[in-house]
Image (cartoon, helix red, strand yellow):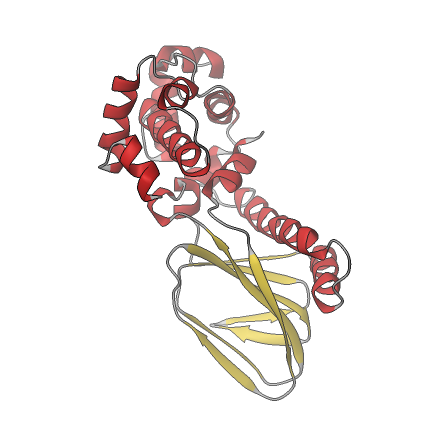
Length: 259
């Protein structure tokens, strides 16, 4: 699985949800920030305003925990909803998103609108998948245009190669030297380049990713701690538990019970 797909999969804590609104009269709707979710608005038909942006049919705006107001003076149809995420483990890629991320995908919007307006057999399974498509479209567009940070990291071949290796085999005994060799760079050059793009050293990110994966397994399965530890590269439960507690402030077993 590529890095962006991994990020979307692991960040989630629930099923994305949405609702469809037909606006007939002049209207205004205020939305407070919602911690623990990435909100979104989609314009199906007509035009409307979101803060200082004029939106038209096919436009998608992903909202990162941002207070905002939408309004319109003419008839329009909009979809709005949210992706549930764990705010305590939000991937740094998503933390670097702008408050309002705009893109356009008329074909995807048209298909989603049809499923919401005229539900049929399978719609409950199809709509969440379509909502994922909208999110991928928005993040992909952002990653191809922003010139710095995580978005640029995913366009840099050596950095992306190392990231992909960490995501593909998080349990491997990675060192900076091994990651540099995988990326095709010297150790020092790779370490500088990776840190410049992502804001953290390679092994710091690797540990964060390992703990994020472990937390997801602890929340969603009853796998023994020894298996969880081995799955993220720790030879002993003790070493894993110590690393997990440094990251989360609680032992793995207690984290699992509280989740």
